Length: 159
Image (cartoon, rainbow, N blue to C red):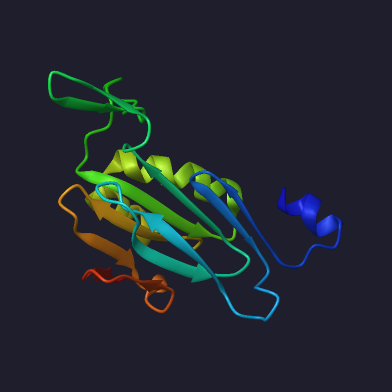
């Protein structure tokens, strides 16, 4: 979609495909776009990411799931067990200029859990992330310090 839009001369756009939001260029006034990150447990957003020429992609188990006997089973499966991923994460948001990478990483890091996802991020240089834990705690990677805002407190993950 991004390539097609750019071929047609589009220099400023937002394309939202559910949990995948693609930001083409900046707003017409030159400022960054702002993308709200859905709060899985309440109406509204738990945080906001601003940027341009990036994709903001979120994976979480709060939209596609079923409950049985008081247990929630989400649609994201752990390939090691075949069962729904249960890693203590409510959502993972990836911010990257690589649209396909962002899509794949949001799910992969969700399955990894926070500790392994942090280690993976430290070995990479092509994405930033926002981790929302089931407990409500928020962690962001240091490259988002100036691009993330929230009314809630959050912790910055440093290299």
